[in-house]
Structure formats: C-alpha cells, structure tokens
Image (cartoon, rainbow over all chains, first blue to last red; front, side):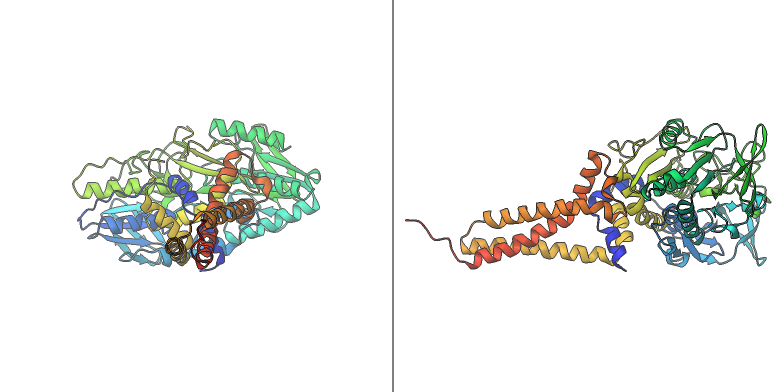
Length: 434
Length: 124
C-alpha cells in the first residue's frame, strides 16, 4: 500500500460511478449445484475472471486453471508505459494474487487440446479431463512473421513495440524520446489480421506527435501511419475522426501497407502493397506484430475451419454465446475467441459474465439467456491528458456508456478513466466482482 | 449506465485503494463526528452556527478551487488537458471530495472556538 495507490483511489465516488458504468454488470446471483469438471485454459484476464465467477456460481464444481505464467500484466496500461508515464511495475502483478480460493492451478501450459476426448494435455504430458472447457489462452505475438524482426530488437535501432510486455513498452518510451530528440522519419502501422487493442497503434502515433510538439520538436519529425487497409480504424465514425485528426496534426497516411520485412541495420522497412513491395527508410518504427492463436490451439480441431478467422487459428465461437458450434461443451473467451472485435480487456468484462451465467444456468437446468453484443472499448489516447472514450459493438455502432460523454471528442474525463480508473475496475473484474 | 450498482462500485474502490479505502472511511466518520460534536457544543453554548458555517464554506470553496486546478496534474497531465466544460465539471466533482473534508475540519474547529467563547451577550 503506497501513496500512489491511495491517490489512485482517492478520486471519490463520482469518478467511480462513471467507471462502474464503463465496466458494468455484477453477475446474476444464481448458482448451480452441478458437480461438473471445468477446465480453464489460460490465467489471463479472461481465465481468472471466469474462474472467480464459476467458483462462486458453481460451488460443487471442480474448477481447474492451466497456465504456466506467474506474472499478470495489466495490458491496457502498456500504452501509458510506452508514453513514459507509467513504469513497468505499475502494470505487473502476480497471478497467484488473483487465483480464487478453491481453484486448482496447474502451473503448466496446455500442449494439446483434444475436444473429441474431452481432455487437454499439459506440457508435462498430464491429461486433464473435463466436462466443460473454457479456452482463454490469449494470443501469440508473432514478431518473427516479419522478416528481420525479433522481439529482442525492441528498444534498439529505433525500433519500438509496446505490445511485447512492460519492459518492452518502457524500452519503446525511451526509443520515442531518442527519436524526438534526434528527429527524422517515424513509421507506425498495424498488421492485417485480427489484433488486440486495435487502437494502440493509433494511440502511440498520437503520443509521439504530442511529445514532439511539447518539446518543440514537431518540425524535426515526420510521422507516417501505414494503414493495412483502406482506413485507419474499423469503426467508420472513429475512422473519419482519426483521419481528420491525423490530417490536422500533419501525420501522413499510407493505405494498404502491411509490414513485411525490416532491416534494422539499414533502418529500412518493407511493406506489402497492392502495387508490390514498397521499402521506406525510417529513423523510428513502432512495430505491431501479426497476432495468432497459440500453437496448441492452432494444432487442435478448435479453430475456424474456413473464413477469414481460420488462417490465424482463432477458436470457432458463436457470436452471442461464445460457445463452440462443433463442441457444445467448449467456450472461448478473451483474445482467442474467433469473433469479430472483442480483443480488449473491456470486452472480457462483458464476455465472461455471459459465458459464466449461461454455464451456471444450463447446469442448473435453467434456460441460458445471456448474450454478448460484441462490446469493445478503446479509450483512445490522443495526447497527454486527452482521450476519446470509444465503445462499440459487433456492428460497429458506437454504444457510449455515458450519454454525457461524446465518444468522438477529446476529453480529459476520458483520459481520467484511462489513467486513474481502469486499473481498479480491471482488478475487480479479475475477482469476478465487476 | 443501467449496470451501475453500489456493490460493483465498492469492489472497484476497494481494488483501487486497498487499505486506504478504510482509512478514508474512518477519516470521513471522524470528520462527520466532528461536525456533530461542533454543532452540539454550539447549541450548548447558545451560539448560532452561522459563522463557523460561513468559514467552512469559504475555505471549502477555496480548497475545491485549488484541488480542481491540481486534478490534471494528479492524472499526469497539464492544465491544457481541460478541453470542455465537462472536463472542468468532472474535476470540480472530484475536487469536492478533499474540499468537503477540509470544510468539515474547518467547521469543527471554528465551532469549538466559537462555543468556547460562551453564550452570545444579549442586547438589552
């Protein structure tokens, strides 16, 4: 307990009333006496939140979490680490501190999923049988899919990437500082496939722009955002707004550019475009890696077999229930779920109660009626002290939690939620209490 | 905002503040007790609460104004972060927390001092 923690919470009830609505819904206080064996693959945000809710809602069930990870990262905070505002310690906690009592934690990774036999196999070869499987493995950052790129390069040779972890996000902040000080060309962008927190590449562009302005160095840096498609964001009104802001701030945009290769020594980045490969010189580049399902998931029968979510191995899931269409006792939550949108912590907040409530209801013989609408939230940081609180559903319709906050307006109150509010709400979510 | 509920709020506060939440609750109760005690002393001394109340409101307002200006810094931002009336309103709302606590403290102290002077002399 320290001063920062005190200050974090001392904003009072007014702010938290807002936060409560941003990350809402207490689980229905219904329980099931079923003696089911539930296995949760993954102890990230989705896995821990699910374990907490099922532990309370199904007291007679055996709940097992399988994950080798000891550390827990508050990933929504990586942007602020990358901005140089937070330290890695601010976003690093221990999974053990959030593991619900009565949950068996197997500290290994899942090596194999065998949904036909209702079993998973861990890396030590241990077979764990289940009645219900929750796939919450998260995703794999595939830096090596970019030729010449490796996560160990982050922080060196003008390369930044806030996704890889807290230390890498801090190294990225230092790389941004060096770039702003020395000047030159900065490249930003995102991969072509599904990714977590699709707003982050835009945020880091805005942060770099703002940092350069505040230091009187904006004229010394040229910022270029390489969009993978025909827009910079999948939700049309947000896309329009960000394009307008980029234009006003002198950020150039190249469309249809997907990072294919990087030459750190020569500081050249090669992009795949419709017109062929294009190579750009850079002094700074923020690399966002392609994201895919972990190998064990990809090698299993669980991923989509066809369609645009098949190639990267996302687990097949019904959009409203997140239930696997071919294996009715399997659900996917969090980043691994093969649904459009939904790869943010705020999405997890809405996905987990849906799956937990439906599972509890179903095993208790009641009708399962909860549905996930695709809720995804991105507090889009647009500068130091300013953000846009963007929330949308599967259809890309903006669904603001607060009628008085314009989602397309840069506001300090939205920044306040990002900087002060989300961590407490996230922790409460991990405990199944928010 | 349909999912707003006090239980969720409590858990968010608790996770954000840890043990400091209870310290704040105790502090709030102590200040509340101070107000009640100050009012009781004023009544016993036969003195009105007008002057302590005026002092508390004045100091509370000044404190709220100061804390409002400090709010952006609390969030690692500058004053230029205020972009709309909503931002200022939000900051004032938050600043009211320390402002009200300071006002409560001032009211208590002023009440005790006022009460110590004894009953107000009657004009005849």
